[in-house]
Length: 125
Image 1: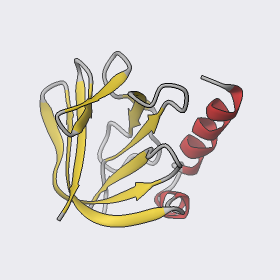
Image 2: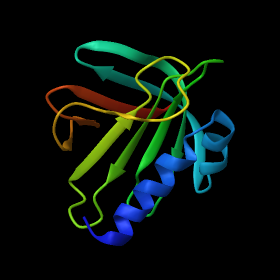
Image 3: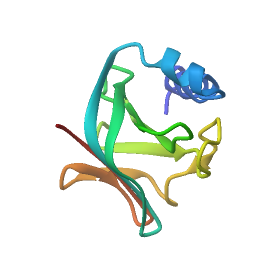
Image 4: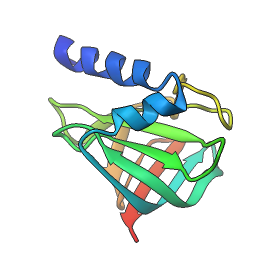
């Protein structure tokens, strides 16, 4: 990953420190969608959520519609757009995406970004 891409990831993760910061990070495109976030076989988001597209590659944030939401960042690699890294808050209502989604790089297949331990999907309503 290039230094510029790494800097973007640091800025995005830093923006996730508080829920209001998550809202501020939603600067490109934001819309409601049907979402799935599964980690180690358990669904943490399965229904309506907010999706924010945060860069030109299509990286996004999924945010559960809840007062104390789960949320996840999927950051698509700018050099290899078929791979992505994912993080999520891991604890309902936690204020930063500190936990990795699965143990490996995510790949896009069957309409979702996934790896052996996690799956993140969205579709417009």
